[in-house]
Image (cartoon, rainbow, N blue to C red; front, side, top):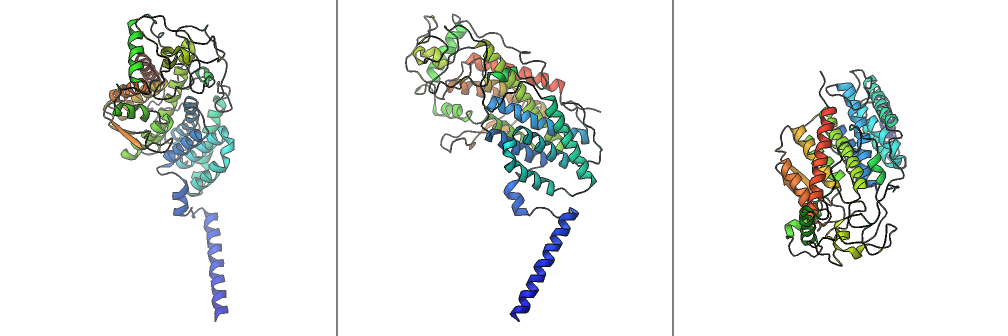
Length: 453
């Protein structure tokens, strides 16, 4: 009897294996729900690969300004693939040929995977299984095959168009740039680590929609003898000090809130809009591309301006003894020569100073650009959005804090304040960054992502 039961069990197992093989060959079988939930992110196919791209790019260790460029590569490929099939909006690059019967889901998977695996070949062990799982969820057939072909063509087009665009490798590479003679107002390396200049080359990357990185170059920072300089100096000295008694607990929290990775912040906002509105692939691809392409052009523009003006950070201006023998001139640094400002040895900002010049503010530029993107996409400046940021009581790199922004103006105002309270940017620099980002976004949105008949 036991022998018969063993034989019966073996027969059942064999039949199950044969059936599974037949289903797999027919394309009817898909991944198990448990496996799917454990790997692919939630959301529609564009959302899934937007999150995969975010994790890939941020996980590579790329600085945020160069991260925007990589995110733009992936989102451009996806957007151009989807618009090739579903039409509705003008592509960013040349039109990719596509039959209307092609699967847009297959096109998204292929475009995203091919773009990411090209720029991040060492991440194949992570990207490969996600790609296999995503394709397994799409029924086999001519529609799937046609969609994959569209996605491959879209990714190949982006890769070819962006070849020799000024991007430098490996990740985090510094580069040479024209310097200024050391003196009052001139940028120097900053404490505590005195790191090498961060990715000056980003400012010379060919933009995605803009004509050039200096198309909207801001006017110079204020003279060190101006009242605007005195006001900016004194405000950040008082409110941006690591030990400031002027800054409230809420202001400190806001300053640290905006130290979160901005790639995760704003792509997360895009996905939340998609979820709240139940958007389909076409609108999701358009929003993700708007966020990342406009974001890339804003960061190219702001880095171009930073290394053009080479304006000093607050820590250098307030504490001339903060500089070290960094190869940029004599030690100590020079004061501003203005009797209306008083330097303070040992002054340090609430947040460690990033290793690139001060003017204009990079996060101001990005956030100014995003305020226009969200206003344009939602059709109102009353954006009514929750944004996730850093909670100092949580783990490093978390996005556990949440702030609500009723209007685009609220968002712009808060990023300027946050950078003052963090001790990173004078108010005039934050405002200049916001103006730059808004100008870039308006231009990009007028020249791309437009409806077509």
